[in-house]
Image (cartoon, rainbow, N blue to C red):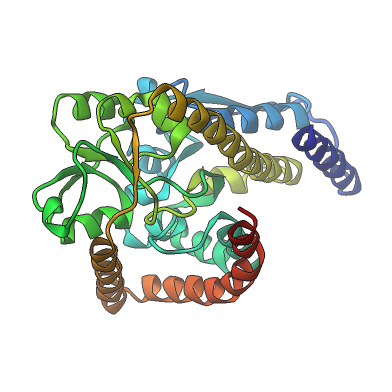
Length: 356
């Protein structure tokens, strides 16, 4: 109800703004195509895209329509950035850290190990320097990027065997993307990035020994808990932000009204995803702990966590030494986190700590 009320308020405010700008109906209909990195039904990721598309069409009075193609249509889960850049699609929905191999700077706009939580990170995007840095980074690729929904804290992954020491990571075959993948690789794991549709089969067949996905709701729907009983708490993705990628030329060609509509729809659908995922996780974990009591919740041993922190620091220093853009964005994130975390500790953290 609250989310619906906020959406109604935002919609009314939007149309008031459009009226003030002198926007008026046009006989021309804008039709775009959007590519996702996900399968057709993959909540809350696909819900976020569908909500955005619905809002765009409704707020434009049917003048702006967006058609969604999932990965089964375009067959390129990790290729949507190029598809938008080349104009094959007008926009896409994906995760920025999928493209760290071609541009390490981009992974910084998803999340970083030991970094900001979702509230802190959104504040950095919208009240700090985050949006400015993100647009500069994506301009090199001929696109704009906008926050596309956050999962909040992600779990540390599903493991077939318990991790008791650093030796248990040596040779471990694990699916994990982003900077965390580089950390695990540095500690001796054989790291791979597998398309979402292939994860369950890879774990079931032993192609991988462990994997990181999201959290209880999305993990349960994938069935990982039926194969790997050790479920580790998170550290590596404290605020995983997805991305709406938009072709720069196509966005610039939109009318002022449609630009406002698209930006408002993306922002509100991203907000909805954070709420939806929190609700889904609560419901899924309630079911999981009841129906699958043999699942063992674990935290990585302190020597392992210390090694991860050290590897994280070394990798950031290494990339920063050769990439000034990377260095400056990391510095911006650290400065904002230092300011925001001081409040988080005496606010949200203290409330939970002291009221259990």
